[in-house]
Image 1 (cartoon, helix red, strand yellow):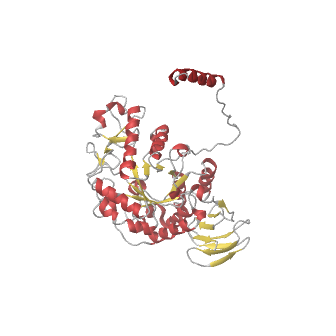
Image 2 (image 1 turned 135 degrees about the vertical axis):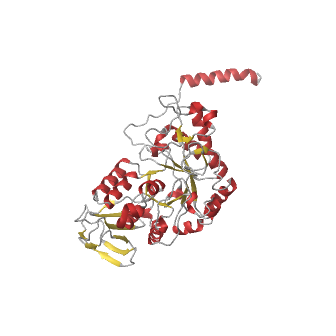
Image 3 (image 1 turned 120 degrees about the horizontal axis):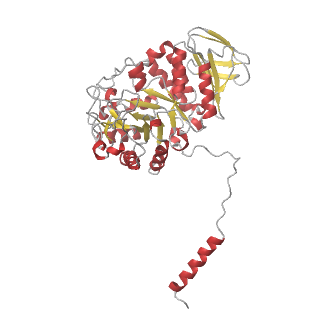
Length: 462
C-alpha cells in the first residue's frame, strides 16, 4: 500500500484538474428582476421609535452626564426611545469659538469631554438608558477636527489644504475653529473606522448620528457600517438628505425638505402643495425601508434660526402633530417639551429653563399613540400615507394610514383661517374615536368638517 504522503500529490492534481475542466456555474442574475436596494438591516427596536436630541452642556444646571442620567426616567415617560447625545469628545482650544467652544470641534476621538464628566459617568448614563429600554447614539464628526487634534502633528497628510498649502476649514463656511480631513487617505479611513468601533465595542453605544455625512465619501460610511454591524447591530442617522445613503450605510436621513415645507407654510409663504411635493418625492424616490427624520427644531435651528415657537408661531402644534403621525421618525430637541423658551447659546453654558408646557403634553400623547397604532410605525413596519382628497386641497391636508391592525385618519388645517372642507372618495368613511377629544364619530361619504385655524383631527378606528 502506498503511503498517504505519496498519494496526496496525485489526488490534489486530479482535483485541481477537475476544477479547471468543470468550473462551477453560477446562475446569471435576471436583469429584469428587481433587486433589493437596501442591503442593511435596521434593528427591530427602531420600528416604533422616537428620537430625543440631548445637548449635555445645556440639559441640566450641572451640564454633566451624571445629572442628565437622573432625567432619563422622565424622557422614558415622555416616550423617547433613542437618545442622541451631542458630541461627547474633548473640544479643541486653538481657534476656539466662545469660552467653551463648539462640541463639533473634536480634539480627540477617543476622549470624553471633562466638562461633561468621566468615562465612568458616560458608561453609567448608557447603562441606565439601556436599563430603561432606551438606546443611545453618539454624535460623530468625521469631516473635520479641531486645529489642535493630535492628528495634525502625527498625520499632517490626512488633512485637506487650500491653494496656499495651508490647513483649511470647510470651504465657504465660517467654521474657523475646525479643519477638514482628507478621506482620500487610506490610513485616515482605518483610523476613523476604528474610532467608531471603539465606542460601540467598549461603551456599548447603539449607533451614531453623523454630522454633515454627505461631506464624507459614501464608500467610507458603507464600509464603516459593515464593520460596526459585525460588533452588534447599530442604528445610523445621517445629517444629509439623499437616497443612496440608505443602501449600505444609514437607516435614517434628515427630512430637510419636510422641515422647509412646514416652515414656509407656517410663515404663509407656501400652501399644502409644498407638502405634496415632499411626500411624493419621499414615496417615489426613497426605498420603503428608508427612515426619514421629521422635526420642528434641533440644535442648529434653535441656535441660528430661532426657536420653534419663533419660527412656527400658532402653526407649531399642527406641525408637531404631522411630524409624529405622518411618515417619518419624529425628533424632539431638548427643551421643546418645556416650550423651548430661548435660543440656547452654542459656545457657552446656558441651561434650559424646565417647566410644564402644553407642547410637552402634546408630544407625550402623540408618542404614546405612535407606539399603540402599528399603522404609524416607522419605515417598512408602518403604513404609507394615502391622500384623501378634499375640497380645499391646497389648505387642508387629509390622509389615511392603515394596516391590518389599525387605521388612522388625519385632517389638518394648515392655514390661519377657519376652513370648511368636504371629504371625497371612499377610503376614510367609517366609525372612529378622535384621539384628542375622545369623541366617537361616524364619518360617511362626502362628509364635511369645520376646522379652526391650524386645527387638527386624528381619528382612530376603534
